[in-house]
Length: 460
Image 1 (cartoon, rainbow, N blue to C red):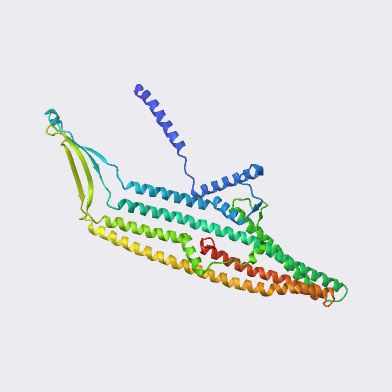
Image 2 (cartoon, rainbow, N blue to C red):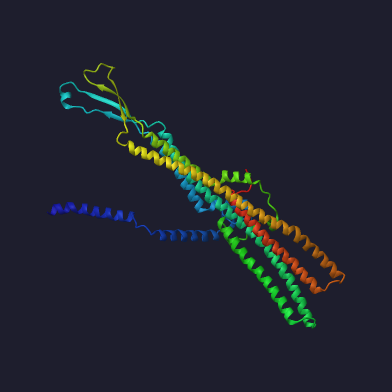
């Protein structure tokens, strides 16, 4: 017993060691939420470490100036969602390659059984052969087409994310520039109201006005200044959102290159039909619907091929035996699969594939109509906002400019009271603020039309 125990001792120790190593090599998995928090914290630590590096040594340092096209490209490179969707599309492409190759099965080398009594009697018989299972006609192409269609869907879904990123970044860029113009307009209104309040205060001291008038003018100036403060805070939020999406520190001193007055300019648009056709070529939803249509056609082809008899295998071999006259021992064998018992099931599969194809065709046609209608609706909104903007610019701006000239002349010739002049100047500045509100409506409609047209407003 002692010897047996001694022999089992090392075996027991080694077993315990193996179990311990296995336990160490397979740590318990964290919960999904804990894994996400850990990844987030790791990103925060890495970002803090990069922030401590000298700017010259940081490859992702914030640029001093940023243009809208550069912002779009940076946002696409930095998007984790887009990277994941592209990786999914790459996986789908690889799977499509694998699906196309898996239809062709490797040949099978067959050797018949060798009987011992025949060997002992001096009459061994041995048959060898190579068996091939050929795919049905069109099966390989249809299988690969179905897999390619699924890969196309994955690629188009990545394009959906890409279009959304571009639309969002372009709107945030325009929003910051619009806010800059609105801040300037609020400051102009606030300055005019403050001058009016100061003038009323001076007249109050000279007993030429009432305290109520002076207080109301001061309150109006404070309200205009509060509007400018509100716009500055909005600008911080919009700029931080933009910089985060392009992968730059939101606190970085980045200057956006663009003219705030560009928001007031009319954007030339192509004809309605040309814009609709461009949208139908660009929109990833069309690619998805077309891929699903191709997949349904491929599945139908596979289902129809299953209904007909076809070779289950082809075999070419050679038989070795004392009675074989060389080289005449070649053999040929074939099997044919007859879909007799599963004929009803195959018919149901064809009917299902046909129904899926009808659904895919209707879905494709519905997607075309939906996108065309969406472009028409957005284009009408743009034209309506454009009409309001052009009308305001054509009527209000010349009047405001002429009012400024006339106010200066009247003051110079003492034909107008200074309070009236300041009041007119405040109204002239307020008209610019109203113009920017109309311009914001126009730019918002343009952003929505750009998304409906697939990311751009040209027809290339």
